Every structure is written in structure tokens, then in C-alpha cells.
Image (tube, rainbow, N blue to C red):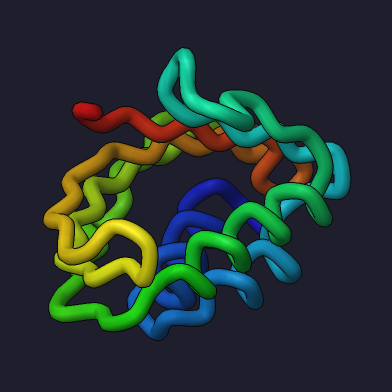
Length: 119
């Protein structure tokens, strides 16, 4: 798949709440995931570890009040998307979140993802 196809499929699966399927289908085995500097697990490597991180996050969600995934913007082998969430977490209550995700695609798979947000 070309970067645009990966980006479109990524957005579709995320909008449908199929985040774990997205990782299974679109991520490379050696993917790297980066959160904001200083956070626990700031850098995670490997598809299974990224899947586990996402599963842990989803398992902590008590309720999604709203979510929005913007249409991806593609530049060569990268794409970005803005994500907005209004979520109630089991351990920290309700939060509104706004972040940017930047993704790198190689050989039809996501090999890097990095998230930017205020803490």
C-alpha cells in the first residue's frame, strides 16, 4: 500500500474504534511509538508492545463522550492527523484531549508514530 492508502485505512479504522485491528493490519513488526518526553514508556518498540500500550489505554476508558479523527495529510512517506477526544477514564475521570499524530510509512506499513499534545 502507498502512504495515502495506509493513512486512509488508519483513519477509517480509528474512526470505527478498531484501534487494535489498525495495529494488527497496518503496523510493521519493528514499529516505534513515541509519546511526549518524560512520560513513562516514552518510546516503545515492537508491534506487540504498541498493541499492549493501546489495549491498556482502551481498557482504562470508562466512556467515550466524543472523538474526532481528522482527514490525514500526506507528504511523501509521512502522514499526520489531529485527534480530539472527550473521555472518562476509570483512574482519572473525564478529560478532553487534543493531539497530533505523525506517522512514517515504509513498504506499506507504519514504522514510526509520534504523538504531540499538552500535558
